[in-house]
Length: 214
Image 1 (cartoon, rainbow, N blue to C red):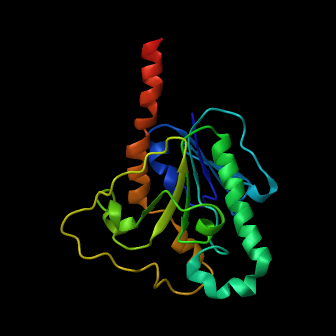
Image 2 (image 1 turned 180 degrees about the vertical axis):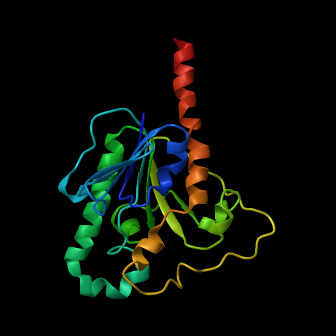
């Protein structure tokens, strides 16, 4: 079974799944061609051109469409980006949602607080990286992140490490530069691990019950 992650440059989200032996595919326009690292294949593809993954059995699907034209933190630049910027952002979100639903697997779509709530629907869940410091102490920072989910995706409960100082706001203080967007969009490792722990066995339970019924 394949784990699919869309608009995923780093592969952090699929790391726990790859370590558990799953075949993982990370698709992003920033990749160069096709490269395999362990159980993870990094594939260059433009989702805006209606790319579809091969028909196969998918275990779970993740998507991280670019928030450049959608995040409310950049609202002061919306007028400069114009209608085309908004349309491009929403089209990418729609392409990700279509592919996630097409896999027929549990799925999640991630974005910061954004206009997606206005043009689609309110998110199903929100979290901060600091909510999952029990899995990764280095994630003790704030960044309100929204998730739209479907088909049985299980949201992990917060699991904070004890005796840590208050979370910092390093994301908001990230220095300007070409890589600022990439740095701000890296998936927190603690969250990735928490999602794996919550979903790896949970979504197998109904299948097991069906087999017993047979």
